[in-house]
Image (cartoon, rainbow, N blue to C red):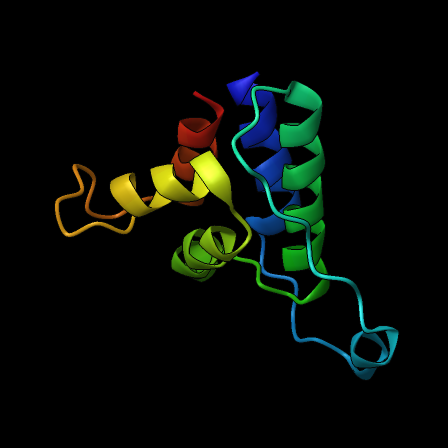
Length: 110
């Protein structure tokens, strides 16, 4: 499952896609929903798909955007998932100093 998520992330946001055009601003796409840490594979898949589409639409893509992906993903978490993020990713006592987006998604999945 983690390999599938890693592949999906690579396909959607690992390559640089350019700048946001005026059509995106006119469309006013919805923000992704929030993931609460439910042990439900469909909810994880849905949330990840939404956030990847959001990043891709707004051209938050490419190798230099990893920190942005980790930071922005934290904005779209709630409940247990948000608590985990605050403890593991955003805490001064964190074990991993520099998270990748792939590590974040795999950590949430676990």
